[in-house]
Length: 363
Image (cartoon, rainbow, N blue to C red; front, side, top):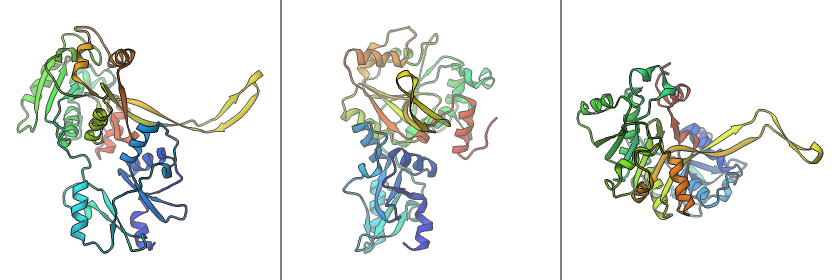
């Protein structure tokens, strides 16, 4: 591989013997959803996408699998003999971040990036997902005091927009246009703010709980008012993923509720002791890396499930999951990468999110 090409694309490399958790970590670090898979000699072998990893995890739940176990047989690449207009058309059709270019011996000779061919910014999850989105915006935002003593959490600025507008923008890209906002704390301020926004490309309906009802209690107010599959999101969560793929997974698996789970990696900075009988040492695992999945606070729900939420009662969405599972219903999990989930519900995470968005930390 020529040195010039290596310098251009080496940040996209991931070895085929690495675990899939490392691929997600690299994707998060470089803000890409597609990587070039290479062997131990840095020779090109294939590509791997975040979708490949998600499909594998949904099927196997094996976070420790090697990348070579996940690779598809058929991938989209272009031969060097193809005209650039053909490559451009294919990249546009499939929303590809980049296209590997191979010679007649299937050796990588170039990579064409989206920004090389298109003026508009690359957006992976543009779509036509016209289903309702419910945003739970009624909490007091106690972790963001003292500013929430003055303004409600949904209206706290993230750069030049409020948290709530940032959440709505993510869904707009996927085609969603109908939003329902559950409000309580400082509800008039939230409603006034959105009533004064001009040229909105979406519709907002407010529904108000007369007392705090937990993370799912207010959804009972929508019983028999929404008759289609719906998204539910906390008002301090940003998801940088393809909502259409989440929706497709939900439908294909006939789930009644799907929660979006983020892969988290925890590094233990000590040697972990495994102790056996008589407290005798069996093994020391030096500074292990633990992988697990956490609830992001974003869900897909079938409308009939709303009937299982008690009215005017404090009720968390975890209680709803327990009810569904207890009657042998289907609760699925759709996995996303760690940095594809941003929680702005406390000051440390809020400032980290500002950095990711290229903004100056607020406090």
